[in-house]
Length: 156
Image 1 (cartoon, one colour):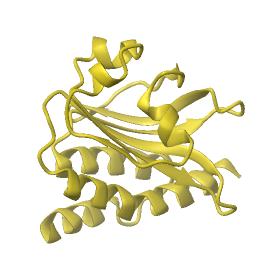
Image 2 (cartoon, helix red, strand yellow; image 1 turned 180 degrees about the vertical axis):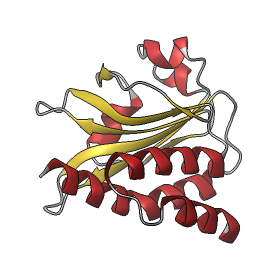
Image 3 (cartoon, one colour; image 1 turned 60 degrees about the vertical axis):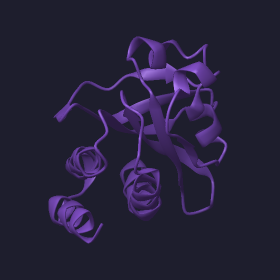
């Protein structure tokens, strides 16, 4: 755990804005062994979300907007930390993205602004079951505050 923390801190140290977001998703993906990690900002209506940084198998890829209805991200957008270590696509059968991406595990944490409102989320997706869910949730809880601060700072 200590080594993973050190690696993340060294990777993102001194960065801000888009560079910070890209470095943190890549670092978190590496630290937790996730196939995908993304940070997303909630739409004004809270029914959609747009990724602002998306790491896919070690590479930053193009961002996209998606509908939150019938997804675990909808639960996260309502303030719940969600951790599904396996069979998440079976739990959310209407989430076509989970099915298309062959996702087995999902961990998501809400991002709160300075007023306590959920403004985004950070999510890890894995094609294999997650065996280290405590580590993943601990890292997400630890870094979600810093991510949220940067998200709010960039939105001003």
